[in-house]
Each structure stands twice: as C-alpha cells, then as structure tokens.
Amino acid sequence: MQRPSRFIMGAGTLALLLAFAGCHKEDDRRVEESVERAGKDIDAATEKAAGHLDKAREDLQDAAKDTGRELDQATDKAAVHLEKAREDFQDAARETGRGLDQAAEKAGAQLNKAAEVVGEKLERAGEKMQASAEAARQEDEAKGKAK
Image (cartoon, rainbow, N blue to C red; front, side, top):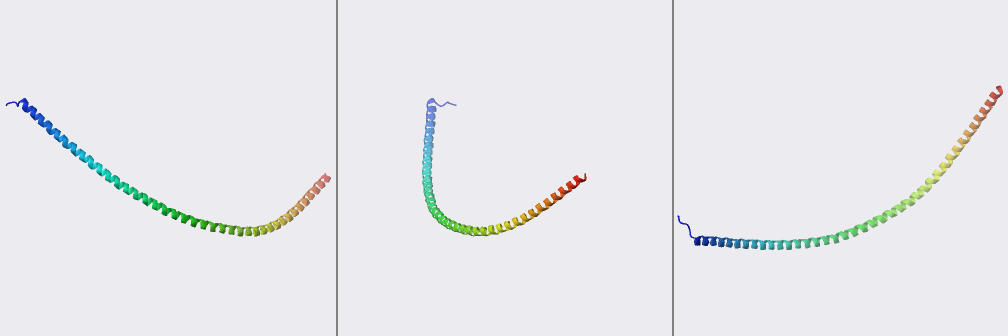
C-alpha cells in the first residue's frame, strides 16, 4: 500500500479544519438564535407579568377604596351602638342608684333593728354576768367566813 502524500494529508487536514469551523459557525449561529428567542420570550413574559401586576395593583386600590367605605360605615354603626349603650348604661346607673338608695334605707332600718336587738341581748347578758359575778362573790365571802 502506498502512503498518501503529505500534500494530500495536509489538504485533508485543512478540509477537516474548515468543516469543523463551519460546524462551529453553525453552532454559534444556533446558540445566538436560541439566545435571541429566549430574550424575546423573557421580554414577552416580563410585559405580561407587568400587565398582571398593574391589574393586581388596580384591583388592590379598588378593594382598598371599598374596604375604606365599609370601614367608615362599620365605624358609624359602631358609634351609634356605643352611644345607645352609653345611654342605656346611664339609665341603668340611675335606676341602680335609686335601687341602691332604697336598698340602703331598708338595710339601714334592718341594721338599726338588729342593733337594738343585739343591744338588748348584750344588756341582758351583762345583767346575767353581773348577777353571776355577784353570786360568785357572795359564795366566796360565805366560804371565807365559814373558814
């Protein structure tokens, strides 16, 4: 077998290098196209997301306005209920005051009666104690004289 000449070997090598270079250029072109497509997709997604964010912001602002109105209405209703409760409390306090005055008068009268009864019982107990003490003293004197 004959060996190919160096010229043919060099030409073949050059052809292979050119083929690789062409493939490389094709790969680079494909990569660039992919990058461009990805960039366009990212831009489109960003615009779409920005649109959704704007819509969400508008919805939140509308909801905040509605919530503000609802809070104002609820605050007004609560103020009315609190005023009614305050009036009811004042009425109840007046009635309770009258009831307490009456109860205090009754309790005072009952305490006076109880104090009189206790005073009488203490007086009787005091008299009995004096009588007992007098009897014990006389008994002691009698025992002392008997000795």
